[in-house]
Image (cartoon, rainbow, N blue to C red; front, side, top):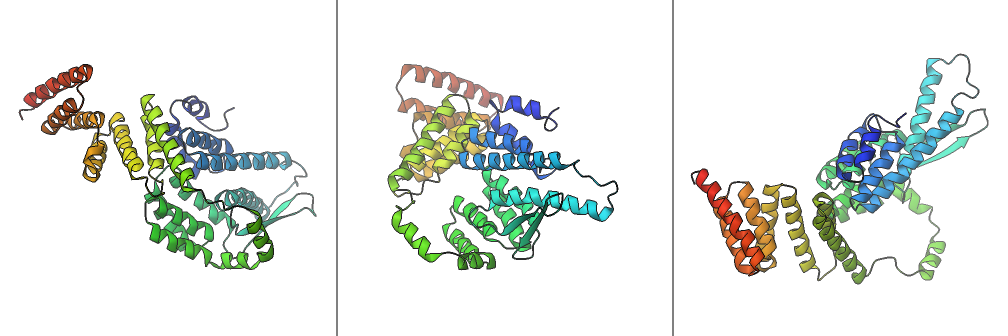
Length: 369
């Protein structure tokens, strides 16, 4: 029996089309598969294949936790089951199951500053999860955070900002403010991100957690360890690795995966990485072109040209011309193709360009332009 409906089909697609698998499951884990560990595992593996190792590992860890919890519940489900269970007891059992799942969710979403604490009362025959919340909010409310986390993991930071904002209006927590900060930072809003982090540190939960910190132990720990902040060289090298990985994937005919790598390269914040970021933008445009998302490709090429005209090589200019052809802007296409031919005197390239120019002229004539 399949762990969930459609599992086998998606599993067969995972190796070649991880992005499709993630998109297929993205909405379902907010609904009928919210507590299905196998679905979260599959999303995690898909994200990892797309280059989102950190988010993928989080999803995998969360999925494993759900599976372990499910196994525990199944083992105890029929032990010491009373003959009659009234509605109140049944509702309590459901709440306990939800709380157990959400406790795992909370650990997954807010590892640095947990808000709820859970204890297990084993005085009776069956263990009961007892949870306390410092702000009076039930822990199952935090299952809503998974939507915002999924939006972040798939790169939809605008959607994540909206989701975190809604959640903060319901109830503040350090995790939600930090999630908003990370989403803002990803889109380049550093000042707003810093304000969100400040709000995270000023919530009642954060203040209470800070009051329990052993300052002397913390000082000793700082003295005994080197700073964990990455050096400029490490940051630059990571950006270069993402860029090179994107080139390989694009060459291997995997433009969607390449797009994710190029976008990660843009997050390289170290000084002196402007050229790397420009190259990544060209890579993004090339990936859009390969995905037949021609309007987006043209916009990316034009943006790069406006920032640094000399950065566009003959190949990028050729791809730009090809994109213009697909959207029916034949004059712009011809201009780009001729420029590409002038930039590269290789006979094979000139032959390719000449053939495409002939096709564009025929299309232009047929369109009556």
